[in-house]
Length: 86
Image (cartoon, rainbow, N blue to C red):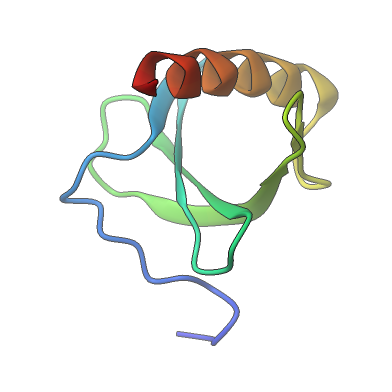
């Protein structure tokens, strides 16, 4: 596995899992300070695949690989998830 792809432990709960269309998105803490790891799988599948690194600026998730609408939905869900942790 290339060095730039984090090794994720999918047996442990992530910060967030959310279905959008036919895809389940999962956000975990990444391996670098403020970075977050985004993984995906088809809804109903067990096989996660690392998708991209995310950044959280306190308002929105930043990720060039995501389209605007998916990023908007995941940002709102992530904000709720971290508020629920407090």
